[in-house]
Length: 431
Image 1: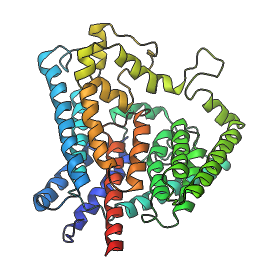
Image 2: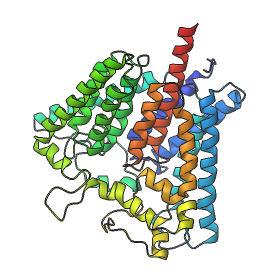
Image 3: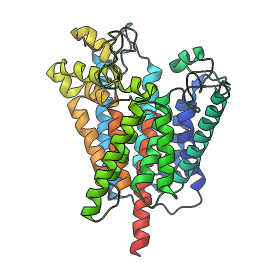
Image 4: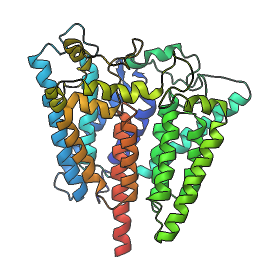
């Protein structure tokens, strides 16, 4: 753990900016017309570099050291594959049919570098979970206030006083940002607020040392996530509680663990049955993994988010499966090699894939191996919170584009924070 105190304000500023990026990612900075998340990424990288100059020879936990090394290899591989296609093929930005641009690639590179600094252990994360707790309270307070307005048949926009950036320009058609259909706090979508809250539930459930009143807080946040009727949110909170009952519940006696596990599974099954009897939840469950809606014009949520990427990958040539096609190149590559998926929909953005599919297609099985070793090094930490957060992150990687973006950064920051906090607590107990 870092002992320095003079530069703690830099660490805390970095942590706050990373959390703020979750809300401000939709907007451009006034006058300069640069997205807030890219500006924050540049700022945080600069601050991290300053800390690196001060702390380059500090002691770093062995899990972080090994994870940082594998992440550096993964990052180098991503860069080489993407650059190779850009320089030596027509599958590049110079192609007029490219449906990505230099700015989007630059932003991804910034987030990728930022993750390296966080995994490197150069940030003092001692205040991170406390700051995260405050943001969670803030987000939920706004969310509950929005429901009070809804009950009073009142709708107002919770859009911040900035213009939406080009990637989120479609939000201009939402008259009531944050309350377009149902409350989403300061986020544009139900899945986004869930992605922000579910790591907090994991921290509550899997560690006794990080958050006070942890079970109560976990139950409250679970109710909040369920109330959003987000398919991703419901799957993740069910998974979190299932892992709590079966694996990470800190229950020592085997007989007690079996009993609690059975009760927990029955409770989750009962919750599913109750929710399935509610029309909004029933409609969502009917299109979650397969289309049971009875309409041929409706697709399951998993079609485009999960199945499509895997289907395309299976149709790629062997060399592309091994080495990948570079970031953002799949549309041009599919055109050049006549790759078509039964899950392609003309009205959807082509390059929208889950993070898992992105790694497979863009960086190949070799890239997936490097990424796996990066996470495995962290998973070996003797912390249930770290293991639980990684498993939740992997589940989200199957269904969201959480690769080199602000949510990816958020999860890595919390994983490093939990690792250090648990290690510090164990050291105090041992002494």
